[in-house]
Length: 140
Image 1 (cartoon, rainbow, N blue to C red):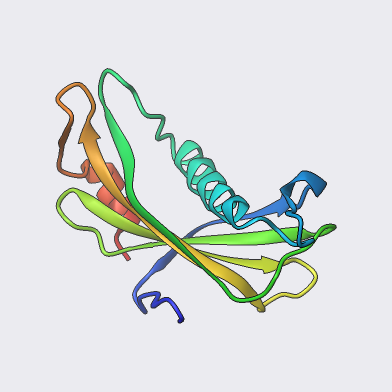
Image 2: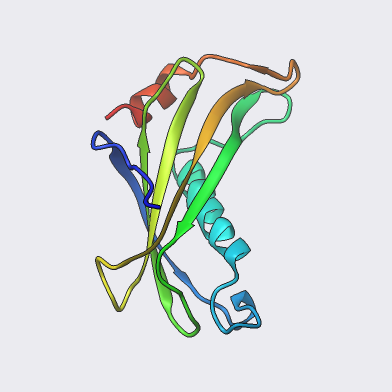
């Protein structure tokens, strides 16, 4: 099964993560849970880069759905390029998508995943409209 990444998406972040020996599983390839950690690392790195630091007494992003599809094994040693895209801004949500490829094999997608992010008023524990500054960043 292939994921559908919308044609109207915006590349917002590109980073490299070094595979650590401890990221491997007993079968000698990247543990499937680690892919989610890499996706999370890209999202958090992007959020910090745009000045979006969640305030537990205010508002910020919460992930309500995450997924990953695995196409080719990643193995130690190596470096993984994670490209993050955003799309589909709604009233309170937007989608993020990532592709993972080895730096030494550009263009060969080893995994792809994403997440639905909802903007939340933390004290009220309720969804809130995306702030205008965030909407501008996630609109294509």
